[in-house]
Length: 242
Image (cartoon, rainbow, N blue to C red; front, side, top):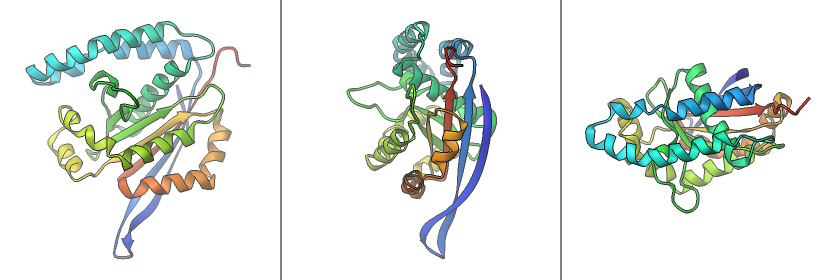
């Protein structure tokens, strides 16, 4: 997995000239060349449950029980890797890879994907993944995958809908098990970050969509609720492509 580009911009938000703040907007383009090895690495990372060991004994018991069947299901999905990558597998690849990018490039602390620690009820269970920024703020991530299309609108629209329906706040009660006191304090004040990550056709398509007016409009709808925004486009190079 290679980071092709990383661009940082600032945008102001607030009620008036005397009550505003700057919001950092990161735009990162990523390319996955060797999909088979990448999936193998993700499979091994999913099986690593060392994150549970840091919890108190009662939480350890609960989260081990919650994650066991999910890990088994994910391993089965990853072992049935096909060309082209299925929609289900692709979304996991985008989600986990985005967390890796934030960890490696921006020094975030990556939390286990949400499906490992919260029940997936009917409909969309909420944000796909979470990281902790160096400033001790939770970043809520939403991933979308399409075999031959840019899925940016789906990712942005889902975040906008989740914010409107307080899906991120529903996660607070479980997230507090994984975060320090400063992060808890920021979260209680709703000082949150958001990450939109999605499949792209290639780097050129990512650059074009980032200058698209409709995309900028969606970003503007997320900014008021954000301390920082991360936009990650991921191109998966399938082995049958030339």
